[in-house]
Amino acid sequence: MPRTSGGGQPTVVSIAERAGVSIASVSRVLNGLGARRDTVEKVERAASELGYVPNAVARSLKGGRTRQLTFAMPDIGNPVYVAMVRAIQSVTKAAGYRLLLHSTDAVVDDELAVLRSLGDRTSDGLIICPIRITDEHVEALRTAAGPVVVIGSLPDGVPVDSVRADSVAGAALAVRHLYETGRRRIAFVNGPCDTVPGRNRDEGYRTALAECGLVYDASLVVHTDFGIDSGAEAAERLLADRTSRPDAVFCANDQLALGVARALHSRNLRIPQDVAVAGMDDSVLAQAGWPPLTSVDLGSTERGRHAAELLLERLGQATDHPEISTPRSSTAPPRLVVRASTAQTATDS
Image (cartoon, rainbow, N blue to C red; front, side, top):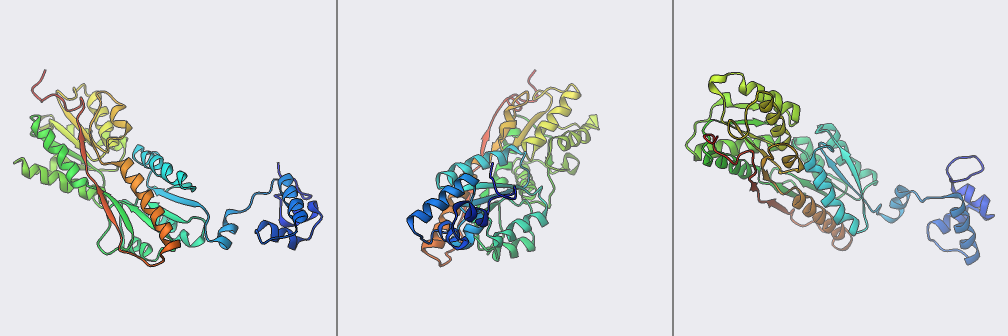
C-alpha cells in the first residue's frame, strides 16, 4: 500500500521528504524535465516505495494525450453492445489505449454529458451509440472537443464519422423470409418509433409487406421498449383475440423475440408450427432459447471494429494532419441467419 507521513495518497511533497530533495526537483523528475542522475535515482526510488502512480489527467494536461478512449452505449447488459465492446477493445488495446465504458440508458442528457466531457481531457476520443438523434445531439457532435465516431445513423451534414446498420433492409429480409415459409399474418413487435432503430425497422416491415402483397394491419403491430419482458407483454396483446392470432411474429431485436417466445410457450403454442418467431441482431440470445431463433445479423462486431479503426485514424490525423477532412460513413450489410424458430411452415405438423 502507498505510505505517506499522513497516511494518504503519495504526493510530490511526501516523495520529496522520502528522497531528501526539494519539491522542485521531484516535479522536474516526474515530469521528465531532467535532473542530476543521483537526484533522478532518489526520486524514482522514493516514488516506488510510496506507491506513487502518475495521474492520467495531469499527464494529459501536459502531454495532450491520456491514452484512454470512451465507449458510451445505451445498455451495457445488451449482448449487442457486449459484442461491440469486445471488438472495440481488441483494436484499441492493440494500439496502446485503455477503453472506458459508460452506459447511458439511452438518456439524452447523459449522452450529451458524455459528448461534452471530451472537453475535460479525461479521454482522447469517444465512440457513442445514441438511439435517438436530437438537435442537441447534432450541436454537441459539431462542437465536440475531441474526435467522435457514432455507431448508428446520423442526419446529413453532421461532421463526424459514423458506422451504420441497414435496419431497413434487415427487417425486410426477415419479413420476406416469413412470407416465403407460408406465413400470411405477420405481426411486428417493435421498440419505440421515436428511436432510429425503431423507425428504420418499421420502414423495413412495411416495405416487405407491400413487396409480398400483404396489407399493413395496425392490429398486428405493437410498439414497446426493447426488452424481454416487453416482448412477452406485447405477445400477450397480440394473442388476446384467438380468432385473429398471427401465424408469425417479427421482432425488432432478439430480446423482444425471446419475450415473445416465452409468452407463446406459456400458452402451449408451438414454435414454429403454430407461430414462427424471428428477431434482429443475431446476438448470443438468438441461440440461448428453444427453439433457437432465426435472426438478422446486423454486423455488431464489424461495426464496433470499424468504429475503433476510424477513431484511431482520427487521433493519428490530429497529430499528423490537423486539417479536418470529409466525415466518413460506412454501412454493415445485414444477413439473415435461419434457425428452428421459423424453419417449418405453418402447415407442418
